[in-house]
Image (tube, rainbow, N blue to C red; front, side, top):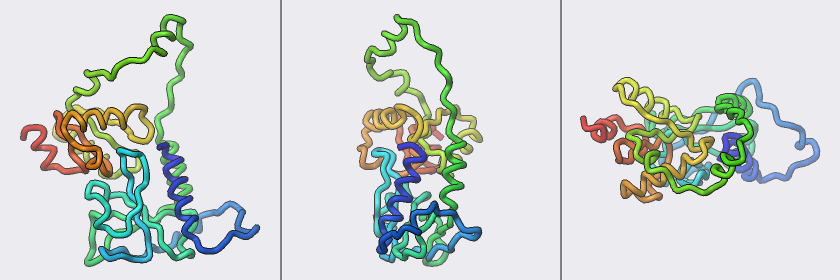
Length: 236
């Protein structure tokens, strides 16, 4: 799933929850207000909202009605869509279900258009590739088996560009002096397949690959940013 498609999916889902029909005056492009609306509080109970978390194994947003339905590894970045049509618009509500203040979780308002612009700008530019010679082109077109060397690299972080905990995991590994590879599940070709191959080799079912980051550390799969689990996998 590309970044633009990711946010388009969220926005489309938000609009579909509106109960009223659009009139001609509603067809004009929406512009985010100068002050974004304040989100309603989210608790462990069922409320007038739908939660959506990113499942890297499928590349899809998965809906949930309660916090308990969201896998622990996917709780750091959760989209909240409220039932109230007044809260539908060119913005997003993003909850961090790992942070709780009293009985409620932290939810912030985000300008959807601005976030799309920033994330699109953050995508790596595709290098210009010169036309291949006939022999090289034939080699490129020929199917090849997955590279065992690629699967055997010691430490890999599977991430998305919008994931704050992915950055924290990378910073932690750098502080420990650990060399690692980062693969973006939304933009890097083959990242998801590589993650699934490593998980299968480690005996981890696809159903456990929820949220980001997902780390492969010396053959062990770690869901989320967990310092203790990383240290154990590194051998201390």
